[in-house]
Amino acid sequence: MEKCTDTVVDWMIRCNAITEADRELYQYALYSFSLLFSPLLLAGGIGFCFGSIKQGIILIIPFIVLRKFSGGYHAKNLHACILVSGFLLFLCTMLSMYVRCDWKLAIATVIASVSLIVFSPIDSENRRLDTEEKETYKKITFFCVCILVLTNIVLFLFERKSYAIHFSIGIQLAAWLQIPCIIKRNCKLTKNIE
Image (cartoon, rainbow, N blue to C red; front, side, top):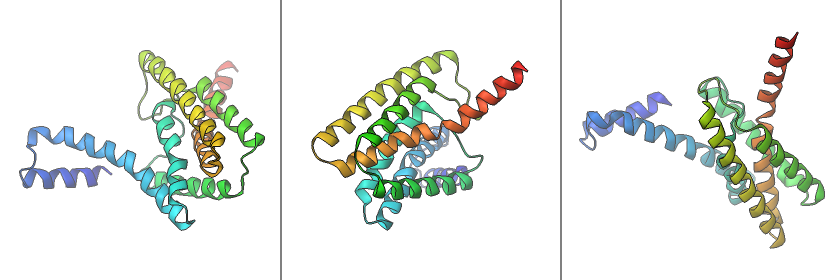
């Protein structure tokens, strides 16, 4: 991804669209945009394969919102990230086709929401959060979870059950990706105690 952003920024400098002094700012902006846009593109593509682009995007929106502040498992490189993300989105899209909008889904979503509130944020090995950032991210995660759950309830009440299912699975996906990190952290704590 760095090569891509560097290539685009170099091209912008050669075209005199930006100055060399702005290089770092535009590299960061392009990188951030790529991180935001690529999950949407991937979810839309997988949704297209299943004939439901809207549902694919609805599935990924709560995930994107929560993932930024809740943290969780990160692949070691971009290729693994794309493969794992694509596979998980494929599974979630398949799952959403078979799940019913009932009390079982509601309970699973509530459990995932509570888990997100309790365990967030989980910082990555690439970027450690300081105490102040952890407190801020925890508050933001709590707020986002509350808004997303309320949105999900509204979708259900207004008979948008297909959207409610995808929204619920998007919330759950953010929680599911925290599980490997929680297990790893608990294993380290157990080893330290022994």
